[in-house]
Amino acid sequence: MKDIYDTVQDAVAVVRRHTQITPTFGLVLGSGLGGLADTLDESVVIPYEEIPGWPLSTVHGHAGRLVIGKLEDQWVVAQQGRAHFYEGYSMQQITFPIRVMTALGISILILTNAAGGIDPVFRVGDLMLINDHINFPGMAGHNPLIGPNDERFGPRFVGMSQTYDRGLRHLAKNVAEAENIPVYEGVYAAVSGPNFETPAEIRALRALGANAVGMSTVHEVLLARHAGLRVLACSGITNVAIDTIDSNADANHEEVLEAGRIIVPRMTTLLRGILRDTTA
Image (cartoon, rainbow, N blue to C red; front, side, top):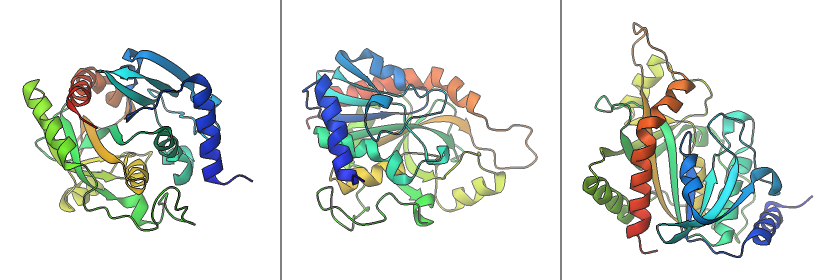
């Protein structure tokens, strides 16, 4: 049975049969945001099922394709949809794409996601740059770095106090200000899903310092930091979290996709500005 390093090399070999481009940026495009990958110039599209070891997404709104091309004059590899822990994959499986993108040569990883707004100031359509996170699955033992460590990927122990690159966050805020895009900074709480949170859980997360909550991203961030990549992550606030049992509202995936009509243009403008102004 092949180990993960050899499987990564097999995946890279498949990608290299399609293109010899060495991308600088990796993009992980979350729910409803995959359309940005369709705008890449000189693009090469590889369905996930063609890549050895690559997990397939089963969630509506995740196309399931790897797209390599040029955006704002930068070579990027875009993950058009992601797999989630709640789909039944292991943490090692859902983070496998980060290993492959790293092996393809990226130095910067930019991740997007759909998130519920815990902070009362948030409104649907707002963007939140993640400056820290609370990894509940990881603290419960579901961590992609558990197991034997392969030094070819990174060190045994990974510091997380400077996880989200300060310079990239500063750049993103400057782009947002120039484009009149409402953007905040805050703490992202990762939960396993697939159920949305109860009102009591929302109140608990708020008390712990979380500003938004979602079911992805932090596991991929762990692998990126393990590999020494610079990381930027941004949440699109798709719903205001419900913190009282007296509310008649309830969260659902349809509102996540519907909010994309507001979020996608803002996120697209923000990401293009970041790529345009970044010196890797």
